Length: 402
Image (tube, rainbow, N blue to C red; front, side, top):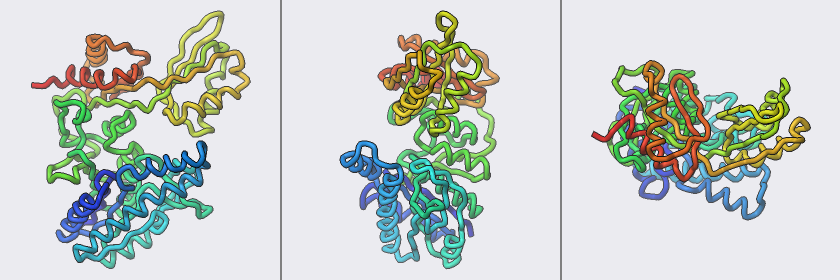
């Protein structure tokens, strides 16, 4: 008998028909002799709808109250799914995050899991109950509800799989696995049968929406076997693991990320410690900085440009505006940009990868604003309106449609 953790996203439980479909997948897994723990997201666009309702009341609501509100979405979906599974005549119980033992820190809206007290989960499994857990949420030391941030249900599922030493963690989505590009935008995108943790982590971090990057990081740390597959078809999915069979494929994926704000600080004094002061104050505000470019300005000054998420753009500008070291500088925020990236472990041993990517963009007359590289990825910042065209061009340069 195996222990299988299954996670279903919002699109998989968007309406009654899809909930019944998910219930049938769970029932099939359980009847095959497995113990099953299920993690569920809020239905469809519920989270976005709740956020919109909050902003109708208050344009800048307190983070704690937002978490109180947003956890309601998963409470609805786990209850409805439990009712559907019950309709198959199977033993089932639904649990909120805190009931399942999720304890987090107190960073509302982006909490980190501190530990999972698995007593309740293990007790329900020992009774051979199907356990349906609300993803994305937990409780802090003040007994306040917290949320793990966008994509947090993936992290919830992997965390449970790690703590319970599950045989497999299946992430069900509305696509059939991990593709070399978004198959809805790039017609010749290829489905990968397997991919490494490192490659998947880069893809997730760079905008691929199949898996949350924190969940992949946790899966790698605890050697959780991940499988990404569709809740709508019976097709085989993509296995995420430490090592894969060697293939001729140079890159594993092309991604785009439009959740990007470009912050520029012009006219910085060229003194030691200035960069430290800028990035340390942003870190104190939990603002993650991605691509960084420093260039020489005029009259002994320098210019600094970096990227953050759009949600953090305004806060970053306000935070930097209060720094005395930046009194004589010009600080701007540009949001009409996107990050396009290629990822692949085979890149480091293949000269000319960057030039192939840049040539593809040049052929489409797409201007590059910033470049960032590592051993397994190359990212460029371009105008957001060019992003889809850029992804298609770069994908075709490396993986032409035969």
